[in-house]
Structures are given as C-alpha cells and as structure tokens.
Amino acid sequence: MSLRHGLLGLLAEGPASGYDLARRFQEALGSVWPAQHPRIYAELARLADGGLIEVDSHGPRGRKAYRITDDGLAEVKRWLAAGEVDHTFRVETLLRAYFFWLMEPETLRAHLRAERAFYEETAGTLRAYAGAKDRGEWGTGPQARAMRVAIEAGIRVNDALASWARWAEETDPMSSETFGTAPPPEHEA
Amino acid sequence: MSLRHGLLGLLAEGPASGYDLARRFQEALGSVWPAQHPRIYAELARLADGGLIEVDSHGPRGRKAYRITDDGLAEVKRWLAAGEVDHTFRVETLLRAYFFWLMEPETLRAHLRAERAFYEETAGTLRAYAGAKDRGEWGTGPQARAMRVAIEAGIRVNDALASWARWAEETDPMSSETFGTAPPPEHEA
DNA sequence: TGAAGACATGTCCATCTGTACATGTCCAAG
DNA sequence: CTTGGACATGTACAGATGGACATGTCTTCA
Image (cartoon, rainbow over all chains, first blue to last red; front, top):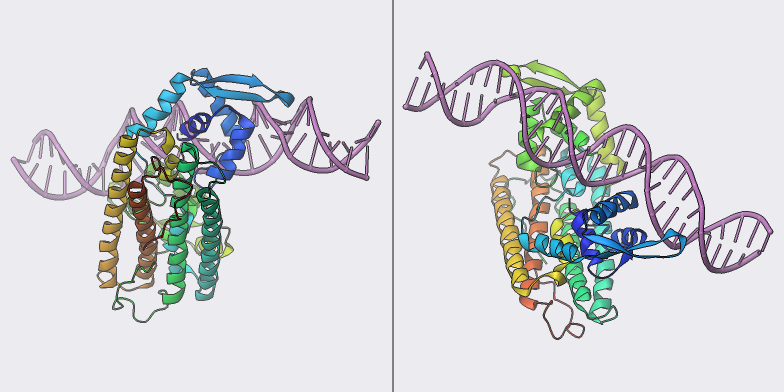
C-alpha cells in the first residue's frame, strides 16, 4: 500500500488537491506507480480520517487542498526509514520474455524492435528532464535534487532494457544454432 | 491481467498442476510477476471453464494436472503477437527515490548501501543461472533459450539499479553543494 | 449567450492481490 | 506406529486497482 505514502510524500512538499496529486502521479510517478483519481480521492479521505493530513483550503470549483500534519510527516519519514523495501518488479516486458519461444521469429523481431524503440525514447525523455534539472531550471532545492536522483534511476533502467532489446535482436538467440556453446554476453555499456 | 497468460505460457511447455505452477511462479517469475496459489487455482478454474486448458491427469494427494488446449495455445500466441505491452514499472525503489529529500543523510546512505547490495546480489544470482544456461546445463531447447533471454533482462536491470545506487552513494546529491552546476553523470557501464 | 474544454470531485462495480484460514494426503525418519 | 514435513487444493475476506459513470464549475472564444 505505497500509494498512501506516495501521497504523503507529495504533500510533504506543500498543500495540494486531489486533482493536483492525480496529475503529478500521472506525470512524475505514473510510470513507476500508476494511480487514478478515484483511488487518490479515496485514499485522501482515509488519510484525513486518520489525521495524517487535513483540509488546507477550499478553492473554486469545489477544489479542496490538503496539507500534511505533523503526524503525517512523521509517518512518511517512518516509512522511509523503516526499510522493508518491496523489491518485486512487475515488468510485463520480462514476463513476455519467458514466452519468446512461442513466437514466430518475425513477430519476435518486430516486438524487440518496438521494445527497444520504446525504452530508448523513454530514456531520451528522461535524459532531457535530467539535463534541465542539472541546469537548475527546476530549482536546486532538496525536492529537485531528489527528483533528479529518481530520474537517474529511470534513465539507467530504461537504458538497460533498451540495451537488452538490442542485444536480443542482434544475437537472435531464439534461432541461434550455437546456443549452449556461445560465450556469455559482454554487458557492454 | 497477465497471470492468465503467464499460466497459459507455462502450460504451453507441458502439463502441470496448480501446485507446480505456483512453485514455478515463485521461483522463475516471482520477482517479475508475483502470484500466490489462491489466485492461481482460481485462474486455472476460469481457464478450464473457458476451454483454454483442460484436466490432463489426476495424481496422488488430489493432484490435478492441466493441459493447454489448442484454443489456449492460440490465445497465448495471440497475446504475444498482439503487442499492447504494458510498460508500467511499479518498482518501489524508484518511488522512494522521489522522497529522499525527506530522509536523514545517514539513513539515506544506509538505505542506498542496502539497495546496492540487494541488486548486486540479485544480479549475481542471475548471472550464475545464466552461466549454467550458457553451459547448456538446463538444456538447449527453445524454452531454455527464452529463459536465458529473460534472465539477461533481469541481469541488466539489476545491474542498472545497483550502479544507480552506487552513483547516488558516491555523488551524494542530497547534500551536494554543487548541485545545479555539476556535469551530468557518465552512465558508466 | 452559448458551447467547448479544462478544472475538480466523487461513486460504483468487477476484478485483482495478498494474507489468513482450512483441509487432507503421502512419505520418511525416528 | 506416529509424527513432522512436503505435497496439494481450496475458501474467505480485506484492501487495491482500473474503468465507467455521474456531476457540477469556471473560462474562453466564437
């Protein structure tokens, strides 16, 4: 149940409405932790119920901004410090790889090309963000730095998957005659 | 809903019981697509209901092995070819990175050390598997090759996250005075 | 002034997920 | 012969998730 802590973390930066949070989850966290607005509104209500956040202000169009409480801040920090990181992945790309042997060679090649293109593009987008951060365009405060570190992780993971797709395309292991005797891959940069 | 297709994919290799499948999900797929036995039994019942699999044999201790049907095989292949890959990640490590600015420097360093150790160890384990595969110890058939390709992806992703944690430890960006003016990282291998 | 589109919040429901609980069988070691 | 552990299948339930539906407001532009 990390949505709870994700919301608290975002609110630790300052007051925000459910709508704001949904947008930020979509943009910044969407690829690492998807969350739609129904779930967000529900969780905000629960957090407010538990006294971890409270209504900060009412705006136009029924807008309701929440503010984190001392209890809420303590709870995020406790979560961050407590460890117990869930290391499960849940990347469909990897699940599919187990079943490549069921695919036609051409379909597989097309799939790998598409995957590679996707991860290269994503990495490129993230690199552009990182560049902007490095030039200080988004501020140099703690939040901006943390965001930069998170983006770096995204870049490296996407690069890794792009290089994997390229490797799989090139070595074509599903039709290789030499499988079982070929040297292990180089893990090039 | 990829558990459905994960099960079909595994059954495409040959008949298996729910217990077998739960174990294989735990071992091979557990880190990329967790699934407990209750869900697996339920899904098997649904798949059998839909005619995608059927009971192959009854064994001791109530063991019930399923076999994939032609319809089922067609369905996995359709899924694999149809594309529509879900690229969301759901890696808690990345979610947490957005909130590093809330952590005490020492807690953060300890966290990064632990993350790095975890990913290095996982990568090492996978490399050992990959080595065994490359020596042909697990056979050289199509399934073994596909497994090898999947493992390669796991190695690269875990390496990427380990190198990220090392980078974050070394550049210590949360306390860096030079943030905003420092050159971008090298993305070393 | 009227309509389109962004803003903003929510409910409902089907399904997925994880945990705990419940049941029973077979085998091997003591 | 009995007991512990692996094998094997399932139910029940709370909470998470995604998609569809519903409602209403404010702003802008024709």
